[in-house]
Image (cartoon, rainbow, N blue to C red; front, side, top):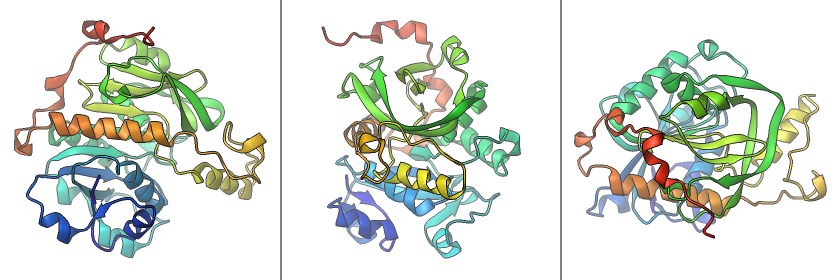
Length: 325
């Protein structure tokens, strides 16, 4: 996919070195099509790393996509330079009157805090409410998914006995749902979190649809509102070395972390990590963009509120399929 970014975004050069097609502003303006408009609310501390991860997995779709990087205004990022933020990011107030085909809300390292204790919680709630009327489909990642499930559906998070860290096996439950098209029966996803969600509350809520899960990690991909709300509890966007960086960071902090499971050959951190999730990750994000491209009104001004596309799980039981036997 030709990702449209600002000409001098640092991630652009790295992506081009990986033979990923990145379209600059000059070339994009010469194409007479309406690009998909995707906003990324980046809540991660190392924002440039997250930019690269997400732009990499958004790069496998043939339609021009215009990326808008968003930041919170009620919290000052401490691990990314102010010059980078000022040049490439916009605050919510700058886009609150605009509409987007898609919105990605990333995770954040605040999961041990109560939601009300998060410095930017009120602003995030406002953005999540805004997304229901100004965005066609919202894709929430890890803590972003937990926060959205709590805000929209009252699903509580749960502190895990130990950190879930590694690359875990997941299985497809409902292949006919759009995000699972082309997926293998089982696939791997990186997980890195101290908390999970109230699984029983998810199962009891008839508006939530679990389409993939892991035996150890629980519900992985949850849909709502005819897939206009998507909640992903893991980090399929992670690059090969992201878990390695987190593991070594925790070691340096004296936290005695467990070695990430299914990640290093022979569980030996001196060996390069195994990349086992890239194809399923690319498939998931491409399926999402394909859905957004096909279903979003051409005129974004014609967007209907998310509630207009709500449905109950019981009315879609025929969508449950087998493994093809």
